[in-house]
Image (cartoon, rainbow, N blue to C red):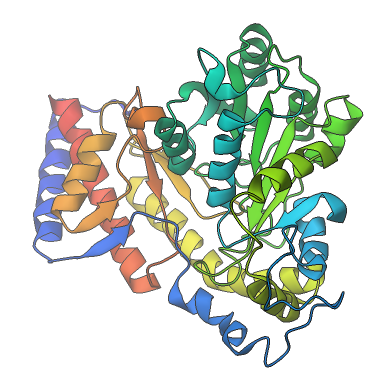
Length: 422
């Protein structure tokens, strides 16, 4: 990645980087790029939710949404998101506000009750492992750590996880029970899984009869261009390959409407759906159907979701374009960085020279720019190369974002040139 420099040229660049950093540290900044939260302006797009359901308390099928029951969720909200998430309506559950909560529950239920096709509970087995494409989503890794599930890193490619590695590990090791996947505009690289990757995931041999793909389709509708990416239908591919129970599909409206008061979804085979419903019946008498009704009224249909997400894109796209423009201006041609240009999702991945990511994050924090901890994109917080930094551009305003990315570039130059001079 680095560019060869003469001693004099390097000395001059390092001196300028130190001056730039002193100036940056003297500004008294207080900026935060740690998490991919919607900005207040994005949340304002869903303000009408707060006035719904406007006295109405009956769903389309006559259900009184104020009362108990309805574990599968309201039909009208499931009909809207069946198309978005590529799950047949009858195999889709609508739940509370958090898809992460559904993933948590699926892990707990798999540990404590027998999955369809399983020989025993996971908790009764000597070792449980998950494949973790890297860089990946830190909250997936945190769930595995919470339950003592071993994490095995798998390299990401431009088409998804390295399928040669995945196929070998899944076929050879019966302790490998699952793989985490963010298939569309993945967190944090923005990769979209190719049709070939989806087909191989669906058809590959698995030593564990209860192997599951945790298909976290968090950014199914979160496009940043006027050419939305499309991915293959995993559930259909699994069924066609003779592995109908292999996929757990997750999604939510968290970054579509109100992040703290959305609707989460689970989709899978009929057997898996009945398994989850049976277990959930022990912990809940039903989801918040009032909130599901207000979402159905507000979004109306799948086309309504797409129109709403176009309004979201109008707010987000300029931020991502600004990040790309500043990184190119400040770091292009230096050999000190590479970065992704995502077509959707919520993150940009910045790759710095090996051994520099933690120091860049530390220097940025000292200057008042807080980033996601280096290593968060890898299991156990350990990036072996110490090279990956996740940028979350969504929450700050444009002026704050500009300051933050320019300041981050200063830190990259400083740390990179210091390393070369050492």
